[in-house]
Image (cartoon, rainbow, N blue to C red; front, side, top):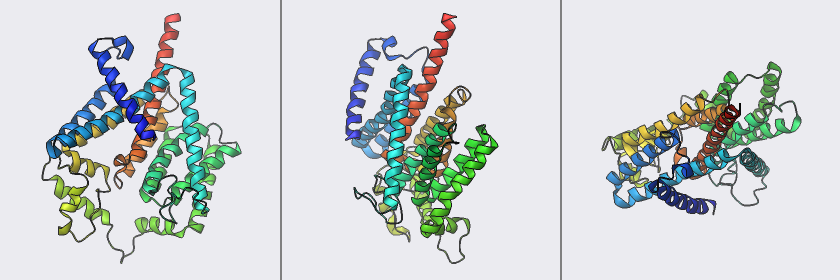
Length: 377
């Protein structure tokens, strides 16, 4: 329902945006001087993905991709303008993300104790929250974990922030998603290398994070085995199926290097008979999957989108409390992206774009407030 509602807002928003642009009412759409960074990078992203899909999959495929990528942009744009409008809206969105985090973590804990009231858990040993797919839940938890960590960093000495952070990490570990676990570890290390936190709080956090790790290894030994298989692989262990999927992805991408071959996901099954492995619907690698589906032009546009977001965050790192948080999220997703295709998961992609729009909106709001203060002086 939420995706359908967002779609309606997207196309209404696109229509109004184009009409205002035609009428040259720049002050009503807040384009400002020049082209804002989010307009340029998202338009390149939309154009590259649409053209590549049109070339390799025809008119219908191109139109569907245009609709989907436009929706991605307007999710960002919608929350961006809402947050940048006032400090009150900023607080409302913070409360909404916090509430969503608490509900998501709480339901994950209920699943661990076999109280899956809505029957959303697909595997008894892997938490999936309100999704039947642990991948989706794990991807969302990356964003929610670093939001909670950033939100509670000044309240770590209190009990309830510690419990919430520990519970979130516990849910992450019990998704049994190795890519997510390693991404969160790397992101946490990066966050505390940049963020200045007192040694006492760091020690407290280290002790805190060791508790869910210990409990998980004790009560869910399958997670420990999955992590151990990566760090200490057995001589008799079979190669990870991902390596074969990556080989398949490379072989398919070579058919059309510039625009890709499209036909997602049936393209994998077209060549599956020549590989001694079950061919899945994607490459378990976001970069290879974009290469297969949209070619080199799509991958460059995709990387440019993230580069421009990071560039905007870097300029506001000292002045915005959420800039580092989003940078850490991007780092974690970048690492996870080598082993999972999170961009094809709408639950993860939409939450990321929503959070990116929120952070960008707070940066814009802070900048406008400073400019108003200078004018008064």
